[in-house]
Amino acid sequence: MNVLHVCANPKPTEESVSKQLAAAFFGKLIELKPDVELVNVDLYDEKPPFYSYELYRAAWYPVFQEGYEISKVEEMSMNYASKQAEMFNEADVLVLTMPMWNYSVPAIMKAWMDQILCPGLTFDISKEDGIKGLHKIKTVVLLAASGGVYMEDDPRDALSRQVRHAFDFIGIDDIEIVWADGQNPMFFMDGDDRKAMALEAAVEIAEDVAELDLTSIADEVAVD
Ligand SMILES: Cc1cc2nc3c(=O)[nH]c(=O)nc-3n(C[C@H](O)[C@H](O)[C@H](O)COP(=O)(O)O)c2cc1C
Image (cartoon, rainbow, N blue to C red):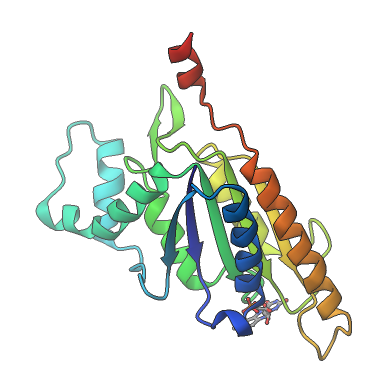
């Protein structure tokens, strides 16, 4: 099983609740599946560039103009996206670790998503066939922490909506969410209990991920 872990949090683990969820998740997953191939991307070490006009042309002109040949500059603007997409397309499971910032994903995570959710790299798009994923990811595991408390479908929560819809667009509709909310001790007395529950949930999700059936339809056909 190949797992890509993308983390958007500049804090050390002892100060970051979402990173502690990741530690609990991977502790259990590796205990159950010691042969897991884990690739870690710390976005603060591998900073994504902001989306550029060159990248826009490299990604989308070939979609809209048959036979469009990208220039050297356009090709170079895809360097980060191509490298990240390669790791993305190798993965069976994607784990995203992040805090809620201003009701959404941290800007550095959004920049990474803008890079990798790119036609020709992680999905193909055409009028005839619609959108076809070029990856084999079965599940996205979202590990998040927030100061406030959010109900399911809370209109203020742009974080889980953004992650859910962005990956659903390229064919990944299974998203497991572990969320330690209420982490602001000024407003919530039970932050530690909420964190403990989330840590337990992270372990449970790791157990489910360890059991994932990774046989793809193509493999099944090949076996028959
Ligand atoms: C820049 C910034 C923006 C934040 N915005 C929100 C927010 O919109 N909603 C919220 O509930 N908490 C917000 N918080 C609080 C964090 O989500 C909370 O501290 C959480 O525990 C951070 O996760 P971490 O412990 O993994 O770093 C914000 C914190 C920072 C630093």
